[in-house]
Amino acid sequence: GESVGLHLPTLSVQEGDNSIINCAYSNSASDYFIWYKQESGKGPQFIIDIRSNMDKRQGQRVTVLLNKTVKHLSLQIAATQPGDSAVYFCAETGAGAGSYQLTFGKGTKLSVIP
Amino acid sequence: GAVVSQHPSWVICKSGTSVKIECRSLDFQATTMFWYRQFPKQSLMLMATSNEGSKATYEQGVEKDKFLINHASLTLSTLTVTSAHPEDSSFYICSAIPPQGEGPKNIQYFGAGTRLSVL
Image (cartoon, each protein chain N blue to C red):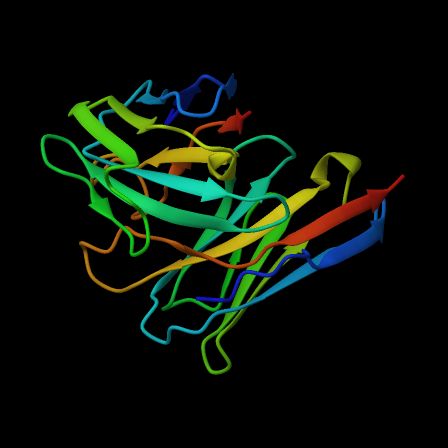
């Protein structure tokens, strides 16, 4: 997994613009990826997931892109709203039916400017 | 569905006392729950995997005698921070996985977290 830093990367976007949050993972054996949103003082909330046999998955206003060649994951949020302000974490897990543990990335703080 | 409740949300205690945090899956049975610790502006760090009816599996560097985990039922896991000290102050978060076949694989649903402040 990624190293944990003392300062979260921050992304500031204007309300209504699209946001792109990136994540690099290190384990080439990971076969399942999840994006979580964590608001201040709360636990992470599931946003969207993607399996390694896919390169794109869309949800409501969110799209996840997976590039296994360079081990890169991104989360795109369309028409960003103030309620989207939070810290976003990518998480990965390994192959196999018994693989439940998640490894979390360092997180990106998204700030939406009204 | 897949709601995880964590209690208390905030606790202040004196150094040397023990604190118990509860994690409950409200609308599903969870054979596996996880406990994480999160420092300000940092990511979640897995402390241990809690399995119903068996001993928890602790991550390297986590003291099992310090952080006691009990998963006595399919809907409840508890984390007890024993003889807490100021350096144990942190945000503790639990998660649970619904049984296989009741949702996408490996999605962990998280509680709201417990902020522990040790004076």
